[in-house]
Image (cartoon, rainbow, N blue to C red; front, top):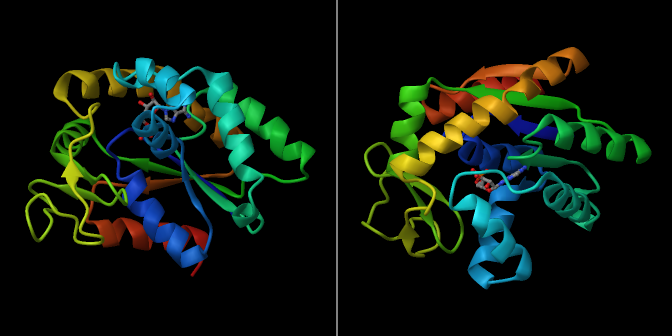
Length: 214
Ligand code: AMP
């Protein structure tokens, strides 16, 4: 199963992706996570990406496309993949379609998770992430059992540098201008399903399972 998760930042893509990957046994590939890992390790890619990420802007298309195409050649992608945060521009989507076609493959389903703006801002500003395993929490809605410590692995929990009010507003604007046109793009392709992401985590997941099949 080849899946793409679409939706504004803060819609809960990462949280749902973890559950989808587990249920359907496909790797969760988050371009944001890959960039953050590279930033943390100080690689040349990380240094380049950080310039854009810190401002809430998109990393240049060709850099991202190469990264994803490389990742998809790994063995764990043989039975499919779940992309979270890619594609993010129409250009990326077009290039990716060409790549898949060359491989006699295609996207089976694009899941568009939508949430209204006020909720998104609250979710992003309150979001906390485990430095070690990437598990996500929310200061009010989903705090860890022990403050600052990840329930899953005991790692340290931190706030992403781009989850501040100033950067969040820019990221939403970037989403509206550059990523939301993808809804139309995949609408035309006929492989998109719309999911209401405003509800509780399990309710949103049930809606996704209904679309994908149990
Ligand atoms: P995310 O964790 O998906 O919110 O991504 C964090 C940041 O990584 C974004 O704000 C962008 O700067 C960068 N990024 C992640 N995925 C992409 C992509 N497909 N295209 C361009 N930039 C990306």
